[in-house]
Length: 265
Ligand code: LHQ
Image (cartoon, rainbow, N blue to C red; front, side, top):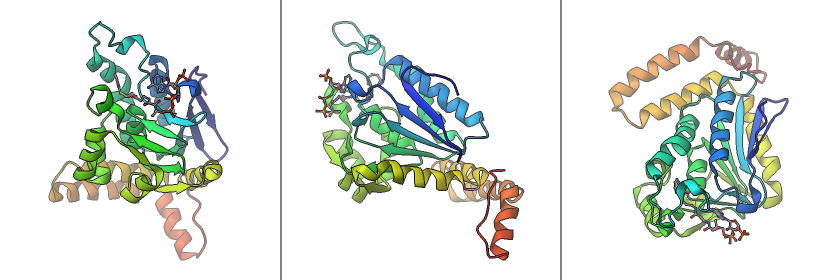
């Protein structure tokens, strides 16, 4: 595994890769280096057949406070910053990769997720949070629009009305409200987050990895095409899934009344 300065990466024997944003002193706010390191880690994970699920989490008491507002590249103190370039080069590739990579990504939200830090969690496939977690669409508080795809992801996660509420007010949303709204899949007591995350990540890592990848592809497509186009696309994907070793294994296991042992191929 590549060594990084602001990102911890650990691949365990179950095929679970844990990526930990590691700037705890500023609640894992993103500097340039951390965004490039995360881009590289996700690309590597995509190519590495040993990686069968990915956990994204934060060091210390926060998940991520979004953009590091002290960073020179986004400075608003007199100079005109080029935020478009900043987003294109640093955040968009991360969000795009999280949605397109054909492996399951689980956000383990261990504390506050604000601004682009919240968007990062929303772009993952599943979200598990501890009770101390909170979500803030902080952008409007600093005079920006929700970025890193928040305006694309939020209406799909919680509906248009709640997405507008989050974006326009920038209020703090507690873990319990996030669960009620469907913004997270599960909330657990603070001291159980690590164990619950590992359980879920291992379940995903033991799944039929190719089918899971195809499920992501299907869901992504379904969000932007009409029903007939989707049905044609779906048939093609199922054709691919039906040729995998894991499909053979899944059916055999069912007929033999035993748990399936998926190999991820
Ligand atoms: C921070 C940050 C931070 C630096 C906490 N930066 N230090 C994309 C691309 C291009 C341009 C711009 O934007 C974007 C997207 C974005 O993400 S914009 C939104 C950026 N994020 C925010 O506006 C959130 C700012 N942070 C906060 O509002 C609070 O820190 C929250 C509510 C997250 C947490 O509050 P507390 O739990 O009370 O912690 P704290 O405020 O005391 O923060 C702890 C430390 O972390 C503190 O440093 P210090 O040296 O005083 O201990 C903060 O300055 C630092 N920190 N967020 N984004």
